[in-house]
Image (cartoon, rainbow, N blue to C red):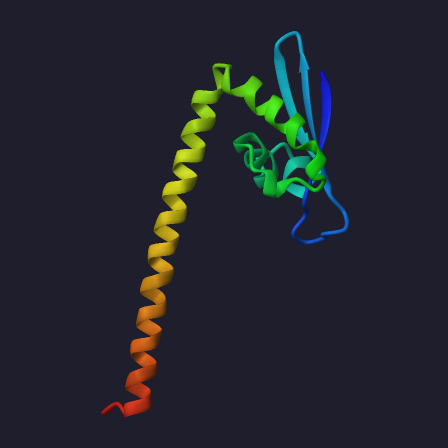
Length: 120
């Protein structure tokens, strides 16, 4: 099986990245044409598609193909490792949200102090 999925590029919306899912003799290889993917890294395009994230699809008509790929991977031993990555990603996002809120609150507090005047 050799399937190419087209993923959105945030830097060049009119030029999607090609993500190739190749399965031969029960060996899975995934390649992405983004700069990180070219160097063999686990880029956001690969991880988002492996999550089944339809928002990453450049061509929404590939939704069923993506669902088949995700289903195949979920039934394999590699899914445990992928789950760990996705869980950690969610934890990082929660921490980032918390820090952003704290940062915003600090800025608002300082702005209010400047507005009302601060004794030097």
